Image 1 (cartoon, rainbow, N blue to C red):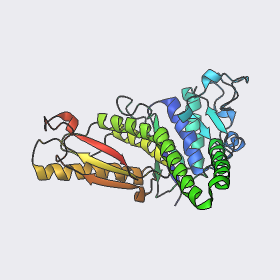
Image 2: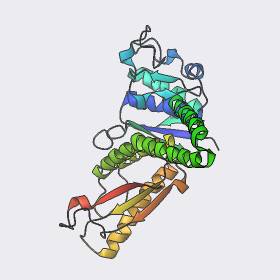
Image 3: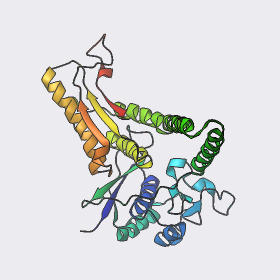
Image 4: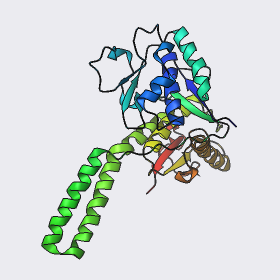
Length: 305
């Protein structure tokens, strides 16, 4: 069965960016040269920009930098670690050529989705078809990690010379744990809190557990964070207000949490072992003074140790 990726987008140029992301998902070891061969400049001759791709740091080239996607989460990361910006100017004829051209790589484009509501950064999302599981890209260890490790090693050598081996092994363990906590707090906890807020803003239909398109876009943002940080494990807790039958509320909260987990696993390729779905019903209201309050109807994303 042929591997395929379907791209859903809310705008023409954002869908084009999604096509390039889909290609990098399917070919994570590709270089910028591979990308240029796969999507030659001839596909977009009427955009006003001479090339489809430019290195993120090359702002002084002949290419019009304002014609490229510039935000960090919009850049493509090549197999050699190079950051590449994708052209953001696509006319209808150029976009149609791109869609037709991308089909040879197993990439298809769905009809544009509604642009109102949903995640703030959810400009496109990818769906893996025919049971396709994308290859995991090799993780390149950032330079700052090597610098921190070098500093720790030097500190250990000095301390061992002064106080003895056994005592200093304990100090090293404490230092490493502290560094890990600091990195985790600053890198992704804030992102997950923001995504949780956006997800709860994309409300479910009353009494239903079906995900709205807006909720799917927010979950796509959550999947990107989990793919970037494979150490993350999450518990998704569903909560309801106290309206209605207690047993029905319990079942609804379980179904809503499980619907989010199923989407992350089946459509975003997140390993099921990294996710838990729990329903709390109306047993743990956020606003205990008003059990019927809307804020009690929520889903919480809890990072597991």
